[in-house]
Length: 296
Image 1: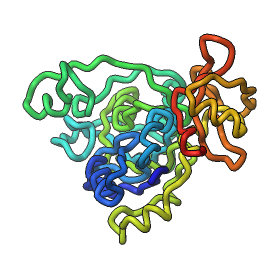
Image 2 (image 1 turned 180 degrees about the horizontal axis):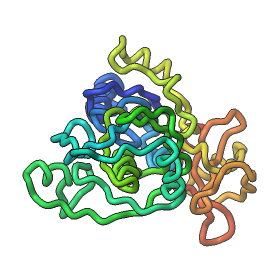
Image 3 (image 1 turned 135 degrees about the vertical axis):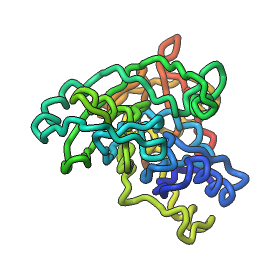
């Protein structure tokens, strides 16, 4: 069993909870997920199955779209409603125009300080474990990519936004920083991931609704969707044999897609993924992810 599942994660479940539900149904095939969602969050959780797990890094590179709700004038240690919430005394109440005027500084490549309550590791331990023990958590700021920010609705203290961003972005921290630019604080009360690349919530499976092996087999999507951002090239039967033997091949990638590290997706004429290729040390292209044996 190989492919990719698009799951609609419900609130109250961890991403690991969902992987475990899938794993029980697909054994002995492996599974995993590409992009953690906190228990508070809902929406698209992409779970590769079987050989699809080799492609998690490519799914993680895809842009992500979220719809988030923030409550202004509040602070919490977790930066969301699941922490110890403190309401500020007489905080400023920014107007729609004032909020909108601050958005451009949060677009493009920006620096973000991750929240203390996060799955990032500090000296081999999860930051949230250290934070729960009352220990000081020192995380380094890092660069993230924010492609779009849109205010969907605003009625103080509730601010609803749509965010398109790259991997590694903490949406609750984005709300925190936006609020601070307005002289106040904010916590996140809701978060829905509506898309990862072209994996959209409208097509996502409910893992708590009659979720069995048969339904999974019917819902598995092609592994080629994991590499949707890469340029592609169609390979013939002879090239597939060479790839299966670990040999270089000559290809001319299409101009479509956005190459990452000069990688290209080698596809069959039927649109199935054979391999991910990179330029070899000699002339030709070598495989870095190889599924060619499946087509012999």
